[in-house]
Length: 181
Image (tube, rainbow, N blue to C red; front, top):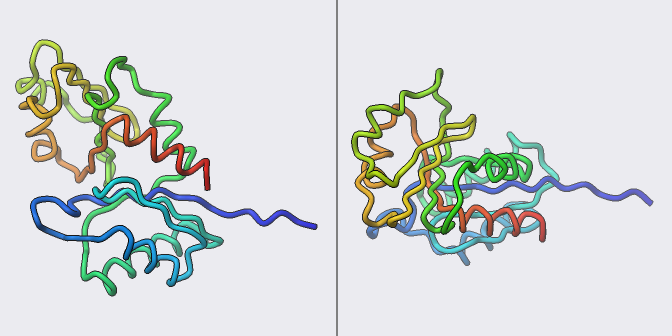
């Protein structure tokens, strides 16, 4: 008897269910993904975090996911798909301690060609805020709160590449969902 191996990916969507734009009901999305051929689909909160399981390879799964968003929901937003090992790598590289809701990870949707210059970004930082860049994105520690952070508010618009941000608490929950699959 052979054990069937399934692939698990986390899709992180940018700009859904924000300010009344790109409204996407997670229950409807889960059903549509399952109906389209994914073995399972789970969501975490309403901001576009979906964990799917599939027998397909990465490219086929990515294309099918995008097609479901486009055809069933008329939504075309930037997104990134990550394997469990991708997410574990990100979590292992967090250089900051503290409240996980005050550590934001900006995942690169398209990777920059070279390491970004953090200096201009730091002009918006408070004394307590720190930035760190790795291969997958930029990590912001804002111990005084993300909502108060001028740097958090401006960071996406200052970057030369598209990103989607999640706090460390959400990324940890997504990683746990991937293992539970």
